[in-house]
Length: 316
Ligand code: NAP
Image (tube, rainbow, N blue to C red; front, side, top):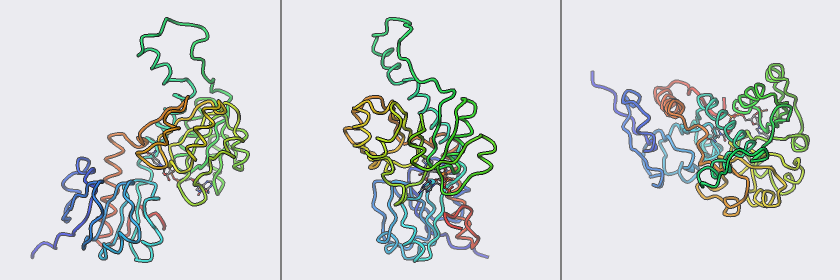
């Protein structure tokens, strides 16, 4: 009996080094670099990076497509309505990146609270003249309030880590989280309460029409003076110029950001603003996590092409 024909799939070229040959069995892969436009053709699956927009035009040029297996948990780069209309399944990579992203959120919280960028710059510059009792004083965490905007997988993982630091936790989400509240003592709050009470406000909601621009000049004004803002979710939750102005004015204590509205561009005023810790979107960047993300995307493709249900569809 002859082997079944190979199935033509498009995979982001940047994932090549994270995949094993046996994961690609049965597939005829076209490796698609991120700086190359989505081509026209009869590919049955695509694994894009989060930087590739897959919308109506791309779906039209891929008429045989059965699955978009996004290599990220966020899927704001995919027009899910257009995909559904064409009966194309959309999957993401939840869970496998939760710990890595929560850890990085904590790296930002600590870097902001303890002024790590200024401290490292001082040592590197050779201007450090020795221990001083009032040098680079930061924010003491125990007893402060951590506000989580979004308390799903990553928001809750950030909150669970906060218990060890002695923080009080409040959160905003569409639905209450009783297990999280029981385990951490967290309480649910409206967005306005979160703004008013948080010493550290950490964003963990997806980019949607409701969440885009939730942090803007008006809401920044309602934050506690000296508060720390952290964003490892999506850049467009924040109006970057408004944040830059709040930092310049000394309204905020610090901002720790991993994501930006127009990556890799960063609003020049924000890039130049004081008291920032700016990272290049490395929330999930650990060896294990990136391999698991690529493996999850591939497993979704293999399942769907074998007529099985996808492992992690964005909508069930
Ligand atoms: P998740 O489990 O779906 O959690 C999302 C949370 O946001 C949920 O608690 C949800 O509320 C809440 N939410 C959604 N819309 C809201 C609204 N309008 N107002 C208030 N809360 C709202 O997602 P996750 O796995 O934690 O990931 C969160 C986001 O992190 C992803 O969407 C992605 O964009 C980002 N991310 C970034 C990196 C990075 O590299 N920096 C890595 C991974 C993920 P309900 O629970 O009530 O539905």
